[in-house]
Image (cartoon, rainbow, N blue to C red):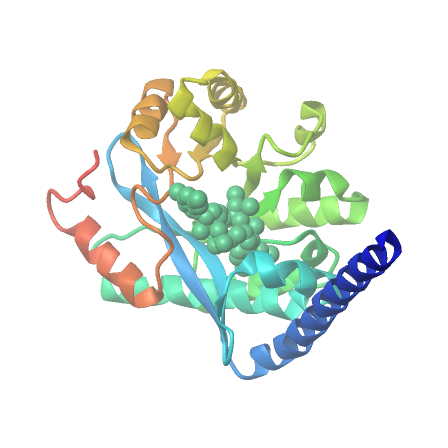
Length: 287
Ligand code: C2E
Ligand code: MG
Ligand code: MG
Ligand code: MG
């Protein structure tokens, strides 16, 4: 009896694996179509100045409007895009789209609006020849000052870089573009290696912000003071409660994003948010 049970287990395990593999293959094939059929879109999450409540900019986050599966989130397809090399055309599309969107907002809200846009970059994208030149041309074409575009790279991606990619990071910097370390604190990095890169901003990973709720403030405090000692900005990721916000204000963390202010929204809703934040006296109601 045990034997047959064992067999069944094996069969179930096997078919689950087959399903997973099939699903992957389907996503990979669909993803190739997605680019051509314009099924990818960007959502935007506001980044807020925690002391004043002003809107500092948006982080662009990719979504996939799949014809049959509905809205798919990046964790489900970015890893596949990275493994198949599709991340390069997709990532380039994201950078272009984000810059054009910034241009649109500027047209609609001409009153001295100085927003920035954050774009996530995969390690793979740094391996591309000509990436920096392409970004440089795009900035010229759209007349966007380099410092209004910020590229987010995770700590582990940055630490995996070899010389040529590190040079590219420096060339990106020479265009005036901001460099953010995403998910900071989760990468087991040696802090000394971070000195090798021209970093502007540390984004404290959501897991540490969550712990503020239990008065575990030490790590956030250390990251904030490390950043300030190095003369760079800090953004707290995933602020969900007023209590977390109060802690962060007390620790002198200058920027933040999270569901407390807004979830990532489509471009029409982001436009609406811009109107709200721009109108006199409206600070989103939290600060
Ligand atoms: P990330 O860059 O660390 O982005 C933050 C993620 O946290 C986003 O998930 C965002 O929706 C979510 N988030 C923001 N505030 C809160 C909050 O208060 N609570 C909670 N629970 N979550 C919050 P999303 O959009 O699903 O993106 C996941 C990851 O996918 C991103 O993490 C980023 O690493 C990657 N990603 C997104 N767009 C792109 C892209 O265009 N290119 C690349 N290479 N990666 C991307
Ligand atoms: Mg990010
Ligand atoms: Mg992050
Ligand atoms: Mg992340």
